[in-house]
Image (tube, one colour):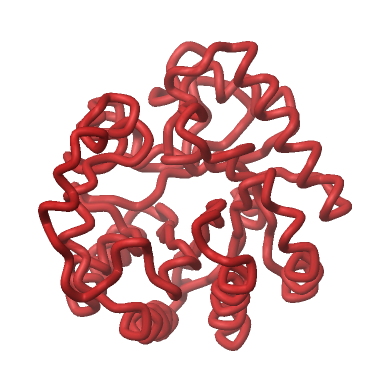
Length: 303
């Protein structure tokens, strides 16, 4: 009997306040529709404070079988869960959870922190507030340009889903929450990588992850942002590299929140091409035998 290959398509819905609300809603609807026509049940991680904007989309998500998760409270420069105090984390997680639960009318069980940063404190608080899964750790990801820069904890974190240790979010323990890592093999399996590399390398990457999953049963977790269907602040074809060298872009506070701004020069895909690449990548994933698309909580229930 063939072993099912779990594929968890996840979308991080950031505030993106620089864009008009109608464009933010359009991009989210596009992500939902792409999944719906392919019968893909996905997990949408929503930042809490701006989430009232998406009330109509929440109803549609639920009707289509998607899961609504929490993506923090503000996604602001202060919301770094690897550095925040215990009390501040408690306030942020409690407020974010209650707000989203009130809007969607059901418990929220899946979490991913802004900028994929976490700590042992975070994991214990997520347990306290009823979360079943967190998908924040990026095991074996080597990154030198994002807001995490080189994170040694990622390099040695388990590749398989695991229960975190109460004193270390990156080691196996017995906390009753599942840490389900975002897929990575040095390079992360995320939409930003496709912005840089294009479609063909991402297909090859998926083949490697698929082969690993066939052998180990590890789920394939893909992370994307709906806003990339619209384009970022710096999506113009001709970018002036000098504009990325302003001193404020090299302060520790800015880098912790946004990474190295120069990385935007690597993005070479316009929004229309990125939309087409996304649909092709998902079709490619679905073409493999024995794959099973599921939400985070569906996967947790299965394991």
